[in-house]
Length: 484
Image (cartoon, rainbow, N blue to C red; front, top):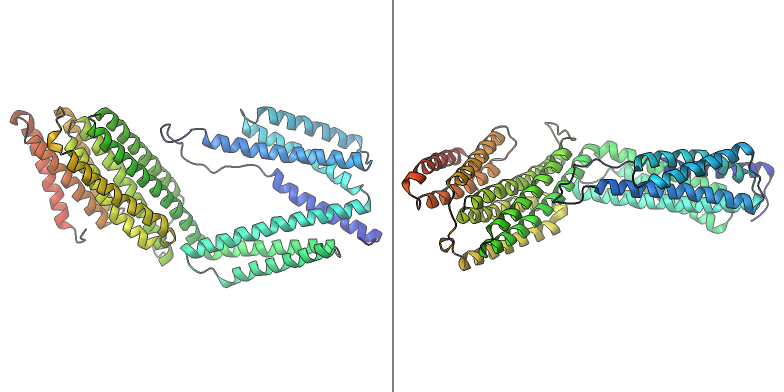
């Protein structure tokens, strides 16, 4: 590389230090993790968030340690004497980092702050060493640093392009000025790469990188300003869809296992399997409620936002159906009523399918996975029909416990009451309310058949209660204007 003047040398030193400080800011930023609901023991490990936090702290410690080693290597290699005041900072930084490493597993938050303090102490030492390096070494380090920043910025541009595509798939076209800014950032970056490849003007390459980052930042701000609300709702809707897919997969697995266990007269094991399904569906519902609590949908929402809101409503409807039906099936099995348990599970499959079909029309970006889920439900429905042919309910004799039968009736009564309240408040669509009523009606008629086989003294009070509930359900169905 050609020699440079003293003024240019100062410029290179300043440029290098600017890049060093900029890169260190990212290293020293506090590590945060998104809050999420606690995971039940039967769903997944409770220390999932802690593990992620520990890994993040370990990465931070490793980066600061690398900076310390780099500082000492440069000072030793080029005979740079570190002043006593900076040497003390270096010693304290190493001590803090050692303490952080020793407690990272047990106290990750405390370890994080120790690592940040160590990084802040080592930064002025590193800057001092760099300032006292030979000219050609500074030029080489600057070239490497700018090259690294080019790679980082290029990765950021690619990530933003992926975000833009993600938004376009869900929300619609992104404003043209955003695309123009991204294109400008890429153009500036390519110019910087060309200068670095020729080795002609590293400082100018650095300036181009900074300009590229400015364009990129402007594009991000513009994107957030123009599509912020729809983008936010789309993120929540996308996460809700993932939860629905997980919930329906668990439903399919749970139904298959329950049918196998019931067929083998392993009622207790079937109750355990359905309880796990209920707990998982409840966990997913809590997650969706937490996510949706952070968004506010205006009355005059745009069609895009309304579309995303519909995805959220359908997602909650599906998980509520799985949650409620698993509760009913457990109550039925505890009451010794296998017929109602199987009927409820079969009705759940029937009720979930229309919502999945509606999601297919609404969430077009997830068409592939939702189509797979729909096909899976059809397959499970086929398995259910095959099972019923092989295991007629009338051939299965389990003890009927009136007290547990009363619990089942109360569960169904509560479900109708809650669904009616949600529908009247506008939180449940007419179609969803109709599906819940029809499913409950089928379960109630099945209970009535079982009660008719019992002595009148035992069955009559319960049968009257069931008949009254059937009348209420059928009255509600008759009042609805929608058809399912």
